Length: 361
Length: 228
Image 1 (cartoon, each protein chain N blue to C red):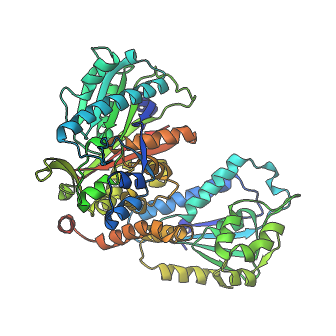
Image 2: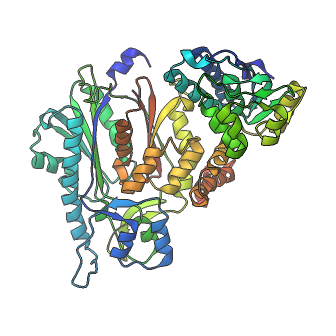
Image 3: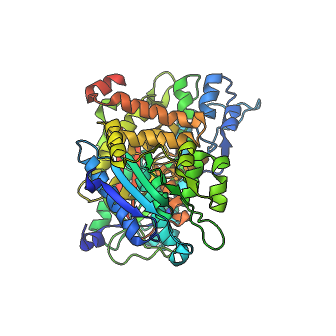
């Protein structure tokens, strides 16, 4: 890519994350719901997750957590999304050296609750953001959606040099639970946690260097791959028996994702003159232990390459669309990325899909 | 061996940007050949020579970082690698030798841990020697710079074969590798490295993913859809 072309690419000028206040170990979640089935307990305890941030339903007089109605869950989603979203957005803007009043485009991403008006409009009212700030809400695309949003907003930022855009991923996974005795819900309930992450994009020459002094990375390119054969393998749809939305994850899905990982990464690097070994930083969605293993094996990565992916899974579980930004934040905190180094961002989710982006410091 | 996929390293030269570049360029060529399809090359590294005392005086840790990174790349290449040693081998010669899949040596080979005024050089050659031979058997060489002769290196498993005919040994490795995929060899190699440091339960997922990858070789998208 020529220097001129690079100069017009948007740069990631800030990132910020937030979680809900209460964090639970897997054992504590099992205890909270009185889960004794050895098979379900095994799924929880072998998940490579130590803690997750959750907002559990209140206990009744007997200490039992009562299941919430779909209406209660939607209220919970809205409340948590605004709380976490506001916090992540403020943290991101602070990192970018910007104020709320600098915000020109806000793109909100969620899959854990449907609401209209969307989170972007609610946040503009809640935080007092300029009413002329343009908006997008991306709803229902799942764990991969953070990169779908980044792709679209990178286009917006390129078309509006000097104007600040933010992608805000907000997932109140505590509002997407269904509790029953099936293995289907056990797998899902063992995995997801609440979390929000925001990332700021700015194109043009006028970006402010981040407070840490390092030049922010430019977003160069995206590549996607939908696997239509596996369209039903990951779903969040209506469960008629339970009368609410419920997740479904096919046990094959980690392998299907792994099998297509090379295809999409090769496509991302095609025409860039880069070899896979030229990528110094891999920021892969913390989807779950098995899918991380499958991506590592198929891309020939090391445990070190996915240290943040694994660390975020351990500390927060799968926080869906914002997970890869939690990893990105940890990479920045490490302070190891050097000018000229390349990174690949990679997310996976329903569709089934793999989304990737190439960035350069 | 095809000269394009071969490199000679002289361990008597101090570690340098030139050596880093040479190893990186070799890796570039090997990866490009593997990526282009067809037969994977076998990469050959010929090493000899050991540095004088005080060789490390002009180094800085940034150069050492780059050197270790280049060697790690060599060690993880998506092609099979063979190293051939003769005479005294220390410094960069020893370090590159230890990063290869197959290590052959002439009978006059001696492996030398470089030392300066105060101690032996603490680079990753020490790590690789421990991985190959174990702490107990390599302690004397690592701590005090006791040379390891060819026969001892063979007994320790640090050298795979002693031979007067290195070209023949390299050709035998090429025959052994045959038409195996370099990329798949790299995956098996990574599983092997991880096996030494990872518990069974933690390793299982990666092995299952690799099994799935092997099972999918040659399957069509339609067959994949049926598998779901």
